[in-house]
Length: 268
Length: 247
Ligand SMILES: Nc1ncnc2c1ncn2[C@@H]1O[C@H](COP(=O)(O)OP(=O)(O)OP(=O)(O)O)[C@@H](O)[C@H]1O
Ligand SMILES: [Mg+2]
Image (cartoon, rainbow over all chains, first blue to last red; front, side, top):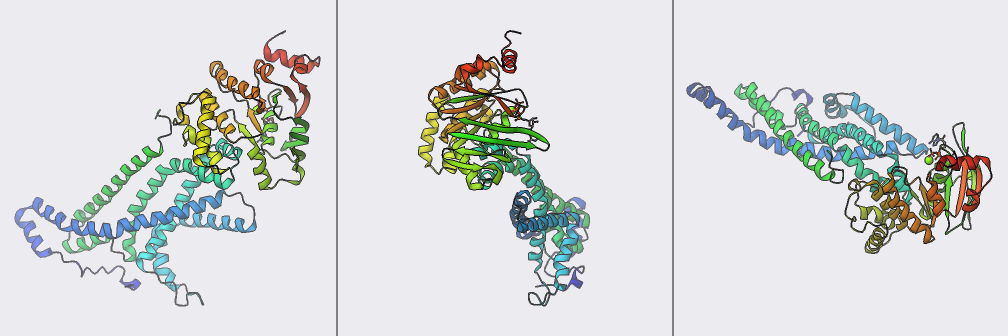
């Protein structure tokens, strides 16, 4: 399955059967409008399949892993535990967040997919760490979105008034129980809009997976454009599809905000 | 019985509690008075371990806790289960309904069955005059209602001591009255209350004992009647300032 890095920019589109010749004929016969329509309707199914097969699953799976990682990171970073183990753990997670927020996502993808095969660890991975494109992509996207979301969650937890902690402690709760029952449910509501932001960004960022040979939606649009010589149409079309997906997500965000805000007074 | 010996608490350089020794008997209402910044809140919060005094001994019934040696988490939790705090700003859990606010402690901390806890919560709501508010969210309550829910939430834990830090200071006089009536009833039922308040009329009405603090030290500790008839000039001045009498 795995391609040599050298193949990266030679885009072979052997699997695509796009009627380039006949299309061009129609284009010149029936004029611009009908030709355009045909280009769009021919390309759309392939783009949608790629979106459903790769773009959306990669975004959803990465976001779920990312959220888990973000919660873990946030909890470790706000923890009050003073043991050496926790200090090291805190430093580690702080380093992780710094690393992934301070380097470009595209570079991260390249390091994980093209770079790690050269990381030879005797005993564990003597031949280098070779990941399939999909695994490398999901891993990188999860780590990246996890770093951003952890900051969102940490800020949300810290934004809950001290009185909520004190009321929880006063009824005899431990810190863990107070977090789980009182603080996190409120923090979740606060963090919903910025988390939705991160998810929407992630959906669009999955287009970078094209560069590590994943045939997701943007990659397919490039392959089609290379065949039908309509880059403007193809890239606008794929942009529109990303826009549709993100619009649906904003609606979902609005809905989630509404049901999680039931308890807030109706002034706003 | 709750007894403090030589309790001390400093914030940085500032000694907020300076060797407090006193006894809070059960089934009696103690009112804590004193000027602003004298350490009343800190004292109350220390009883519930929301503040950790650095020195002093804390007797709870026949258990002894030494602040100088530090308290384990287990000891802190065991004290907190027997003392409940009612805050000036209510601190209800905004994401839970009134009923769920009240059963949260009994079900999650005391591990009571949900239906028993709900039944008692409903009774407590009736007791504080809010029988019809079980399903409301805190944001839908007035301040007086919210504070009465907070009192019901404290009662639901069946604590030996309820600690109230200026429970009515955020309320206007009519809403304050709703809360004070509930507190008076609790005092009459011999629920042990320790109340910090600036309301002298209320103190005169419900207190059995008065603790007067200034600069982190106890200036008066005794029965209510004695307090209001004292000849100590500082206290006479304080009372007349608070009641706007003899000025
Ligand atoms: N967390 C803290 N950090 C530093 N100083 C504090 C802290 N909490 C209280 N203090 C200080 O301790 C002193 C006593 O505060 P405390 O809140 O106990 O007074 P109080 O008697 O309750 O006053 P009030 O009537 O205004 O509520 C004040 O000078 C206050 O500024
Ligand atoms: Mg105070």
